[in-house]
Structures are given as structure tokens and as C-alpha cells.
Image (cartoon, rainbow, N blue to C red; front, side, top):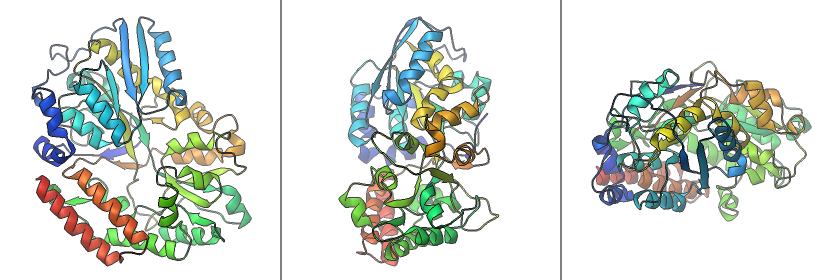
Length: 456
């Protein structure tokens, strides 16, 4: 049973390959001898969908989560239940150099059995390059995985009617708030609040050298949902939609009134990577992010602080309307085509999705399938040994285990890397006052349309 609702469509393989041509996907295809997703055997089981029996052997698993933040405990529990299967874990850094290392290792013959991909870009490269085993039949044979089959509205990424991964976690975006700063101003935040109320709260929390918020609500994403940066089936960008300018103007205005931290400080201190630092040092009162940041909040040795964190759902444009959460399904776990232990690997994937995910909660990663898990125990793990001192625990439960959230699954990737680079540069310029919002919008539309045309 899925923790949240999702909506997706099917990838068009040709469009995806065109989108990633400039990012090295075609090089991966060549390195793999022309193997592609369509040419793979369906599951390594003769196509009958049987999962086979758990075998003995050693599984090499590569993922981006530090081993002490869940993987060590999870794999120890797995090996206790399946003593004939040994797991070794290699952590890679989930950034561009780290993902390049993974892809090079996969195509170069490094013995990796199971790989965790984070985000559609890395996953699409690996799936379309023939590096991942087709799991369509195996997934269809498991009733617990019905949401991950290649059907309409799948909660999985679908490539030409096939699926290659089991998504393990749901990452809802929430607002983390310094409760001491709220108390000092005698402020109360309702569970259902608006963008205007968010801005007003941020202004109240601001002081000399202190900013009410690190970032601002994702206005366009909330309204538009999946593939929000594209229109007309991915043939052009959507940056002429006024919602983008509206969201950008909100942040520009809040930086101007000093209720949001300036982009100059973010870039100078590399806070775009370490956004937990200004929050946990009291420099900003609110931080919009995914729950993996809880592992920093509970790490009081690295980030000593004496306030409680309250968590609230994203503010919305209008109360009473349904909006998209800007989070995502994540940790897409796959078996590699070169694995010599595919049956044992499938045993691991099934256990990870239905039982093992609870061990990853300590690292801020929340399992999608929760029917057989103790939510109270996961909440306790989330907040750590000093839970009541560090968190409003009830707010953590409400924010992170909200089954009503509507989560988007992006399926169009045409020129996605190029568009990301373009928008990062334009965002920095507009938030530093070097571009007007109108110029930002026109440049975003012009340059992203050109990137899409080049990739198509």
C-alpha cells in the first residue's frame, strides 16, 4: 500500500535518449555493446515472472546513504534472516562526479549486484543504457508491488512498458521551523496555511542578521504537478506560465525585505549544499526541505542547538484547494544486468521494500510500504534519543506520515540536464538582483526552448 498518491505517465524511450544525448547516455549505450532496455531478458527467470528461491552468495550493493545512517543496520538484519546471503555495501556520493563513477563502474565490469539511483536523471541513463535488469515480471508477481507495475498511474518510472526498479522511500517536502523563534514572537502556525501567511511569519521571525526563511514555497510545482517545466508533451518549456514568475517574484520580494536569506550569502557559504547549517545555527527560522535533514537535527555533536524543530506542511496559494507536494518517491533500487546473484538480489529487494525500510528511517528515509511496520517506532527513530527535546514529535508524525499527500512523478527528461544548468544560473542572477523577474522568465523560456530543440 502506498503512503501517498502519485501520478505518472509512461516514458517515451526515444525522447529520453535524445534528452540525454548531451549527458553521455549514448556513450553508455555504446559501451554496453548496443544493449538497450527493450532487448533485455524480462527478468532472468525465463519470463515466467517467478522470483526463484533465495540463493547463497555475496551481494555488492552501492548506494548514496552513509552506512551508519541506516544501511549497516538494515543489511545486518537482512543477513540475520538470510544467513546464506552476505551483503557488502559501498557508499557513493550522490553528485555529478559520484554518479559518473557509478556509471563508469557499471559499464566497466565492476561487480555490482544492486544499485540505488536517486532522481530520474541517473535512473533513466542506467535503464536506457541496458545496465539494469528488467523487473517487470517479478514486480507483477508480488501483490505488495502492484503500484509499481507499468500501468497507468504507476508509482514507478516506466520505460517502454517496462519497469526496472523498486522505489523504496517517499520524500515529502515539509517546512521545518525553529520553535523557540516562534515562541519568542508568540506565533502559532496552523496546519493549513497560505503563502501570504508564510511570508508574514517569515517577516516576524526576521531580525538583524536573522532571516525568517531559507527558501520559499515551490509555487509552480504545487499547482502544476508532474512535468511542470514542460508543455506540449515536452516539445517546449513552460516558463512562460505566469506561475513561475509568481513564485520567483515571491522570493525576490522576500530577499528584498530581508525575510529570506540573500542569494549572495548562500553562494558565498555554499549553503545550497549545506542548508541545514543556517537553520541549526539559528540564522534562519524556517527551512523547506525533505526529511533526510532530520539526521542532521538529531546529530547534536556536529550541530549543537537548544531549540525544538516543529514541522508543518507546505503552505499553499489558497486554502481548501488540493495541491501537489514537491517531494518525490526515491531510492530506486535495481538489480544490474551483470549481476551473477540475481535471485539473491531479488530476495533483498523484496525484503528491503516490505521490512527493511524501517532501518533507514534513522537517516531520514521513509518507507513507502508501511502495512507491516510500526509507525510509532519509526517516529521514535526519526527524532532520536533526545526526541522530545529536539522536536515537536506530534508535528513530525503529522508531516511525515500524511497519507493524503499527492506526489508527482516526472516522466519527461528532454534536455533536463541542460535546463537544470540554465535555471541554476538564471535563478542566481535574479535573486542577486542582476535580472528582473520579467527578464528571468523570458530568458528561461528562450534558452530552455533552445535546449529542448537541440536535444529533440
